Length: 560
Image (tube, rainbow, N blue to C red; front, side):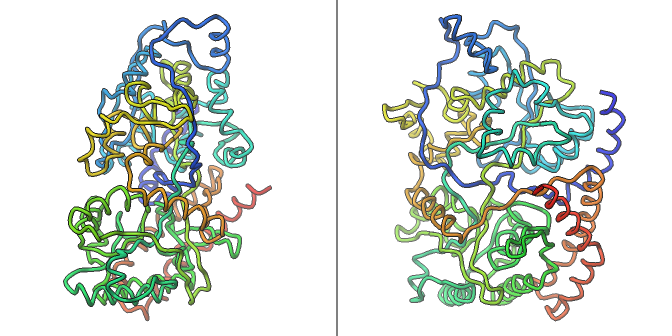
């Protein structure tokens, strides 16, 4: 690992700047679903009795035989631990993997709030676990060239199932953008079966009806609806978002005809399809519409003044107890969290999404949805003692058996598969978590399955069994709006070479420092919007035009 030692200093030097504002799309983000639930029989762990032909076929695909007779080993595995879906260290998936592979996963579960920092420290140091789940695309591009991670292409005989999926026609082009110097350095989190999701305006429909106004079709009409709700509930604010200020802009800006900070990104850069190029959102004329909307909403008592510090739990509590009447966010929370909680207070209370709104000022009617797959990766430490066995294990998670185990648990115990392929969760398991704030997350956390636990090839069929039917219906509606052209996919950030990435990181940090220091004063009225142009000029002085040039150069290179 000579290269790793030589270039480690560079990784350490830029790690701090990568913390402040990454260019990633959606780590947690969601994407268009393949809504057809697919069948599949998961083999019970520890069974033997296969004939030699079957064993040979499994060896070719990189999958070990059932009940591995290889020596027991312990592999360290770092990932975040969601407060919404806490994962036990010795969960069902860990147990089944140990039975099958003789690999004990020693989970290093880091609370969500601390994960980004601790992950960055681990990546920039020599103290790495064997496996890191949740490496975002920027971190992958930063650390892979240093020799930090194993190259999957060096183990093609072990990862054939995974490569077969990501190199198929429907993913091949996207996969190429994640290659680094011709290598592949992580297993990407992929969608198998998902409910369509998108950040959209969601309104308390019962309160909309109380106003006597119709469903808004423009942002101006939405503002009138919010004013009318405020008049009826003067002691309450009307809306907020989670994850603080830049996330709020990410939810609103593109939908209002501008852009910046899309899908959990800390970057003001976004792709503008009308111009077919990447732009820095806050310096565009169109962004004035967004900041004006928010400043007016703050002044009129519509925007919750805690927006700048609002976390997910606080937002969910306010939306669930009736304190807020609108949100612009991932629609899945409506059927999973808000409506079930509101029903305990008022059986007529309910949230629902509305169609993308027209921005008359910017001449658009659109919304943005997450990428199909996640731009985050599970990477293997280049210094691990067990490279081949870990590659076999991670590849297995993309096989039929591995997908079923890591999304549903143990067949015949946690779920069954009906003749038509429908997956049925054990009713006792559902009953056990019936009183959880989110039944879906409760079940998944207990088993260690799915997106927020150990799943890699994500199948969310469980939603259909435990969620409010409105969630499933919304997924169909969102797919229809997408096909109609009203909702666009958030594109992946183009790949930069090492020199470009260093410059992008430096520019991004400088811009984030200025934007974050100034933006609140324009929302809360401490500075007049008449002075907005001075912030725009300051941002341009920090290099927005050069940042746009770097993005568009890389983008055009990727198109060739």
